[in-house]
Structures are given as structure tokens and as C-alpha cells.
Amino acid sequence: MAVVASDGPVVALAGGTGGAKLAAGLARVLDPGELVVIANTGDDVEMYGAHVAPDPDLVTFWIADRIDARGWGLDGDTFHVMDGLRELGVEVWFNLGDRDLAYGLERARRLAAGERLTDTLADLGRALGLNARVLPMSDDPVRTFVRAQGREWPFQEFMIVGRAAGPVEGLEFRGADQARPTPEVLEAIASARAIVIGPSNPLLSIGPILAVPGIREALRAAAAPVVAVSPIVGGAIVKGPTAAFMAWAGQPLSAAGVAALYGDVLDGIVADEPLESDPSTPEIAVVTADLLMSDAASRERLARETLAFAASLAS
Image 1: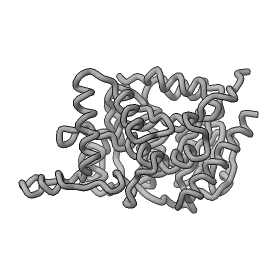
Image 2 (image 1 turned 30 degrees about the vertical axis):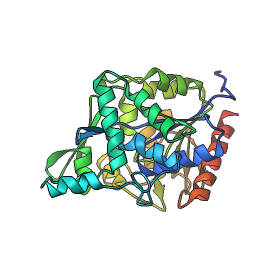
Image 3 (image 1 turned 120 degrees about the vertical axis):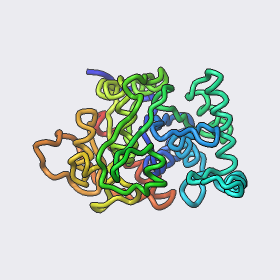
């Protein structure tokens, strides 16, 4: 039997607000450097000459306690560039703060020069004083496309221009077949003492990560327990279009539906109610908890409970 390293990192898979909030909670209850976050890059977009990485940056801003009150972007950021574009008659449907844009422009410059996305994210984290590592799932480009409303949408256009309106008719992670996980991602998974899948959209936010060849296999082979935190709270979604995507995937809007989507990578799930018995759902351990993360204290509480659950499975 594989031995779980007692001094290995805690690895979190994250995308979207739920995953970023839990990552922030984990960073607060762990020692500096103990947390490694593998972030979804399927939402990345080239915009205004910048390479924008919404999920890695969202996770970074949350962990660094620099997130704006609106729930995205940097606190105190200004939007003078967006205002200037509008004055020039440009249709600005993707709003990006000035400092956010600066990060994206420098990232685009470095990527064009042949540098890795992994290294650009590490430097952003250092600039913001991050006490954790945020890794992209791959240095290779993967882009999420959604089919809905009778057309195909790049992810950001679906969310903002299309207002994430369903029903969903299709989902594609372009480039995933050719992408490869980075050595840092594989090393983190292999050396982890616990692996946590955040309360993110299992299809939109975690799906692209698992679609990169080698990551699902690495999770299955990991000595550490893999536990998911359900994004379903009181039978509903706190934020985002998860319900429409669960319906498209033919899964109920429940923790059991989430567990079925993750399949055999999971050893356990944190839910706000017991899982209903279902022959199609793999037998996994379950612990119930209050999943709402409305403030720093609740984020830290859920992080501690999730880590304690993972430790109980490791033992």
C-alpha cells in the first residue's frame, strides 16, 4: 500500500469563485508554502493584447486577500483604459481593471517570448506576496467552448454576452487532447498529503483540468486521499450556471451528481446532506458540513473540516 507523506503539500484543484474561496481558507489554516493550487486555464482569453487568465488570477487575488468586494479583480483597481476604449467607440463587453490589464499584457509579452505560463503565474504571486503556489493545469493552451442558444460560444462570451443562459447543448475543451500537465502539477499530486477538489463547477471549472491527459490518472494513482467539496448548497447553486451544465450531463443537482461526474478519482466528498443511495454512484466516504463561505471565518472553518476529513481517510 502506498504511504501518504505526512509532510507533503495540500493540493487543491480550483476554478471559479467557490474554488478560489476555499483555496483562500486553506491558505489561512496551513503554514506558508504548504498549499499548491492547480487552477483551470480553460477560461483564459486573449483580449486587448493581453493574455487574461481569469481562474488562476482569481485564486491568486483571493489567497493574497486582494480580491475586490465585487468578487473579481483587484481591490481598488481603476478602469481608465476601459473608459478610454468606450470613448473611442469600442464595444467593451469584457471589463478589465487597469492593473489586471497590466498583468495580462506582461503575461502576453512573456508567453510570446517563449516563457511558460507556469513561470508568469509564479511571478505574479510573488509580486502580490502570495504564501502559496498557483499552478496552471498545463502550459499548453486549452479553451472551453459552450454550445447554447443555437450557437457555439467561447466561454467568456457565453458567460458575459450570452449571460450564461441555457439550456446547454454541448461543451468542448479545445486543445485538451494535445495538452500535457506540467512537471510541477504531476509532482505536487504525487507528493501530496491531501488533494482537495474545490466547490467549483464540476464541468466548467474542474472538467478542463481533468480533460488534460495524465491528470485524472495521476489523481487515481496518488497516495493521498482525493476529496471533493460539493458546490451544491441546500439543493441549489450559490453562483454560476452549474445547474444548466449538470442537467446537460444528465446528473441531478446534488452531491451525488457531482460525485458521479468525478467518478473513481474520488475517495470522499464533503456535502451538506448525506448522499442518496444510487447504484450509478461509486461508493465513497461522505462527511456533512455547512458549505456556505460568506466570510473569512467560514472559509477557514470549511477548510479545516475538509482537511480533517482527508486526514481521516489517509489514516
